[in-house]
Image (cartoon, rainbow, N blue to C red; front, side, top):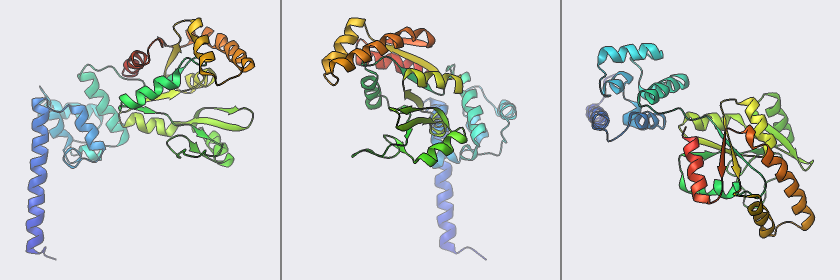
Length: 290
């Protein structure tokens, strides 16, 4: 069946436009206007010019790489030279990203950073600051069996699941860690969203308690554990008593727990003092970047 004349012309124009878009993208790589890692990220996000770029052309747009070297690199990475960036499999994307990062001298960021610390140290405040000021950071979302409260959104504040679904997640080893809180509802950290966010190029942050951090250490040894400390014990007491959300007995209980938690700081990879929120957040993001 012959294509109508008008369709042939439209297809021809579209093909020319696509070639021009790819040529412009390669030129931007050559001039340094856009990084190769950003191009690869755009391809994964469905950008037409980046996704349709053959991986051989992509490599040859990099400095000091000709056709022979490009073919050698693709052979090393087990990627067909006929592949387009948008058609790479997950493992191929990971291998190419790692090769590009190593070539650029970029240290590999951990797949997950865990933030823990004693009560009233300001973990939530630091995390909120990062959420507002560092778009490259993705916060891990916990699953819970408790009902959603007014204003809470599934997938944003928590993944609200039934007890049966939580049991299934445990049976299938889908949780990095989990716990029963106050003897009623269960909470846990799903693995899949973390893996997907890391594969998409995000830095993933999980705010959690000490026991959960220990579970993550066993389940994900590559994770980086960060302990948030107060400037002093006196400042921690001031913050806890000053917020006025607990009675005297509850304050004493929380301070006793904080003493135990502070003694566990040596189990963590990095310690950060929360003397000023913006500074502590900046230091944490530097750690996350590797």
